[in-house]
Length: 432
Ligand code: GUN
Ligand code: ZN
Image (cartoon, rainbow, N blue to C red):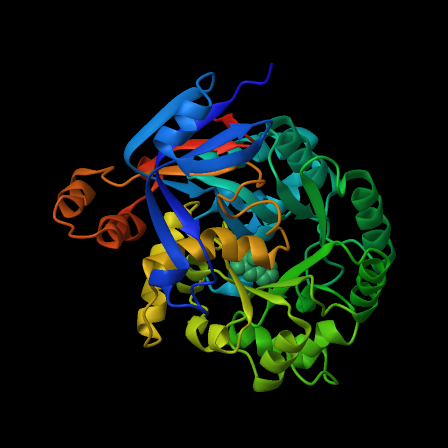
């Protein structure tokens, strides 16, 4: 017989998008509540006493003074950059050439790709992240390794082979044809297998010829249910370079649009320095943008305009951008998103930050029907937060006067020590 589990405590529940409805109404903390988990899914949600009485055979896991959240969803990462996170002193293009490309070169070795895949998924689970959309390297082995490790763990993941056929070193370039062929073979092997899905992944316009972008646009048109992930308008120097490389393009987004790489299932990382036409087109097609605040401050890219883009109704997720981002933690990322919004003259509510890190990222990855909330029927990916995980946070928590005031210090000051328990696909994880 299937083992049933009941998790009880305070639940984070979304009734609406807190950027469209006032956050206090859209996001609720349900006290003394409980979830029933069986066969990897949430099968009931009710008050604790009712659920326990209805399912006396279930194993009960009480979580007083904690917050039971959907597992965090990191909508843009580079798992191959795990071992070079926090590399000093460069801006985007120099940072790629100096630190990133030499490290990515190592992923043609299956054993190294497997080692970093396992290390990355251990680290992220310990930080409460249960799903991510990852760039791999140009090597198919890098995709095989990550999908193999995620499948072993029953983990939902989105990933793709990063395609580059110019402006990258020898050994880290494919061609228009091989990028199409290899991406297609990987997609056919892995997309939709268990909890795995494939994203077509041109790295960014500067490292792709028009021929490669066109080939990947064709592949996307042939597989429209796949996501397409890339980078957009991250740094001012990068945008000037794109203008030189694509003199006929109207703007950065047009280098994708012209080759069939703009669409509803497009997921564009960074998107800081957008032109009005770009925002209009992204909104028209309902594409998703991903805010990577620790990366944008760490590499010196700029301030993402969350308030302006959400006011336009643009779909937005949240991400660490490991290893341009300086942390594996979505808590740390929420804190950075809050700080960036402050620098931009707006304030994000704790409910908005938690929504971005869960339901918002799920929406941007078109996974809202599976993950990102604690609704009945959803896959049981859960992160349970200790709201008093360090002495510094505890003394603030003890001084709080209402529930958001008890939660916000953990969003601002928390890290992996605040992650009390993690469930992936209905299985409690042993955290490293
Ligand atoms: N633009 C193209 N590649 C990358 C990358 O690996 N990280 C970041 N932050 N930006 C990029
Ligand atoms: Zn990136």
